[in-house]
Image (tube, rainbow, N blue to C red):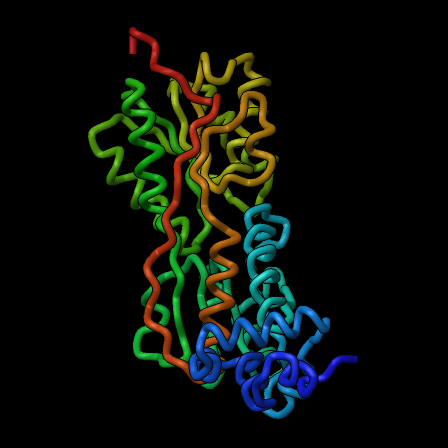
Length: 332
């Protein structure tokens, strides 16, 4: 196995410089110039050198493990978050362990066990927001910024979901729709409260009909809520609080003999991988899950290393126009 000494010899630097380049600390890496760092990395690639992460973590009193907590591992959006988190962690010599649906007590226990260097909590609901040990670095993803007030080991990384919802409503309004349905999540997570506030602000001048749906109820709950919305005096355009709910609306529309988008326009939120495969392809708000996971790991790694990264700006969201919306009928 190639050693750090061999890397140092080829790069023309000291072993201490090689250690700084492969350190888990941004502050340590910053002590090496960009040109020198590139020489060290090039030498490492040439030799196939891999730093001994386990030994480095032991010296630093760390495990090299990050815990990612999601509310429901079956949610397609969380696969995107995990993908980004895993890629970023691998680049930093870290590993990610995932839990699904753990409440605040379970998360507190795992923090107290010191098995993990830090915790990522994605789209937390109220059951996950109890007291966590103050000595554990935590980054909340797609969560309320108020969770981190005054804590040096806490950060929040938001998505601009309210802005994404506003863009969805504005798109339908620009198509001439004046009566809009909303399949609204009844879940307590901050992300859904943000979607609701964004919808309400954007639809203030429109006629609105809403039906609540439990996101964790899956496709069956979404189909039932969609039938309730479409069975009566139906709207000709509907915004759904995520893409799985939109899939339930597609099923309900088919059962009722309604065509998308001829009889009802549909917009989702998330941009899960299957959204482009819907028939017709779903217009949806892209939430950059991979970027959320990757940036979250970067923030957490900085906190673990004793740094104080600034509070990040919310990640932007993007409305993706596909085939599930059309102009409103003239009579509307």
